[in-house]
Image 1: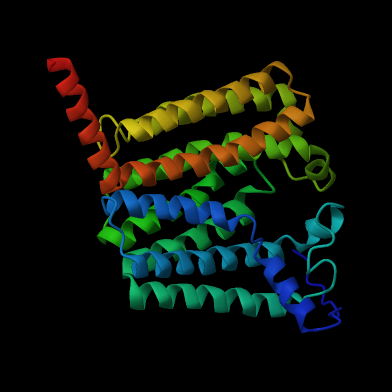
Image 2: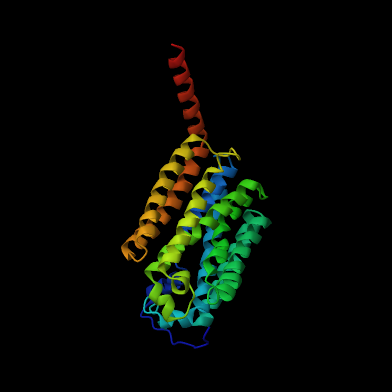
Length: 319
C-alpha cells in the first residue's frame, strides 16, 4: 500500500458524496444483503420482524461499506496501476487516504453499535469478523500472494448469512453453517469467471489470480468442479436438514441446471470471454434467485398453499 497524500479534486458537495459512496463499492452490497435476508427468513420460519430485518440489513450495509472502503485504501497502489480502477476516488485524487480511513472506521463503529443496541452481540461480532477476515486474511495475506486467494478469502463473503441467522436466533445452527458453505462454494466459480474477463489487469499488477497463474483451461476446470459442489449443496436445505421444501427444490433445480449449462459451455471454450461474462452474470442471478426461493418457500402462505394443493390432489385421487 502506498502512502501518497492526494489533493482533493471536487467541484461541489454532490461530487464529494458521490466519491465517498464509490469507496463503498455499492454494487457489491445488495447480494450480501440478499443472503443475509434469506438466512433471516429461514431462521424465523417465514415470520421476520420488519424492524429487525431493517436494522440487520442496515448494519450489514455499514459493515460491508466499511470493509470495501478499507480495501480501497489498502489497494490504492494497484488501483492506480490498473486502467480499470484508476478512476476510483483514491487513485484519482478525489479522496485522501486518511479521510477514507476515518470514513471506514466510522462506518464500522456505526455497524457494531447498531447491532449491539438493536440486535445482539453475536451478530455484531460476526459483522466485525467479516471485516477483519476480508482485510487481514484475503486482502493482506492472500490476495497478492496466493492463487487460492478467492477460495479461502471467499469466507468473508459467506459471513452475511451467519449474521442474519444470529440476528434472529442469537446462535448459529447447522443450517446457518450450511448457508455459509453454500456461499463459500459459490464464490470461486463466481469470481473466477470475472477474473477470466480481467485477467490482463491482474497480470499487469502481479496479483496471482488463478487465470494468471494457472491459465484459462485450469481455471474453467476449477469453476466446473466448484459448480458441481455448490449445486448439490443447495439441496441439503431440503434433505437432510428439512428446512425448505418442494417450492425451493423446484427453483434450485431450475437454477442449478442453468448454472451448470453456462459453466459447461465455458468449460468447452475456456478462452471465450463473452461466455465468461455470461457465466459471471448468471452466477449473480443464480444466487439472487436461489435466496429468493428460500424466502418464498419459508413463508407460511406457501406452506398453506402446498398443503391445500396436497389435499386437493388427494381428493381427486379418491374420487
